[in-house]
Length: 206
Image (cartoon, rainbow, N blue to C red; front, side):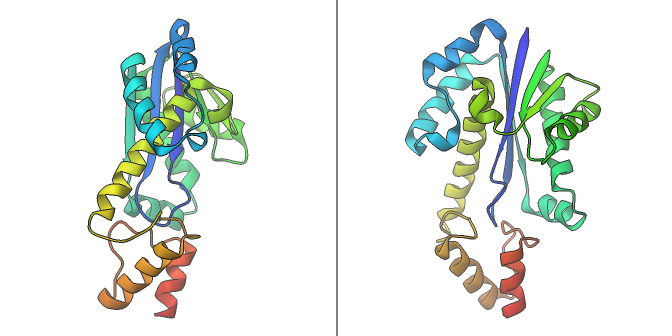
């Protein structure tokens, strides 16, 4: 019995990719994840997440990570369908891993509707969709770690050339970077989400 867990990372930031990750593991091996100390990635330090990432990919039977570019995110936000974009990518993970059942962390206010959409997009695979699934199911926690580490690595790579902070709109370093870049170049870098309200504000004010 193959159990799959799926989660995202980087939905809120104004720059960098949105990452969707899934892991698939035999039901009888799920306790190995718990024994490792796997839990919701938000409750772990970056060092511990990196350490667990390497352990998780050895324990699970299969995993799949997808990065969604700011360009794709902007196109979906324009059509008011960011949730549908996530559902599409989560369905892609389900189709790749082909488990017996998948537990997903719902970004939709209506988890049942979100689960139904993923099921429909993945040839009617069995989907269980919940809010805060990453803290309820260890298999989703494992996926959350893979997603978060992938996202962090992408930001670290961008940081080699730019002082861009955490990428969150609440981070003054990030806002300063985006503002300065736009003033100088009269355009946004490819890795910035132009559809985000704080970014649009910067464009309007400059």
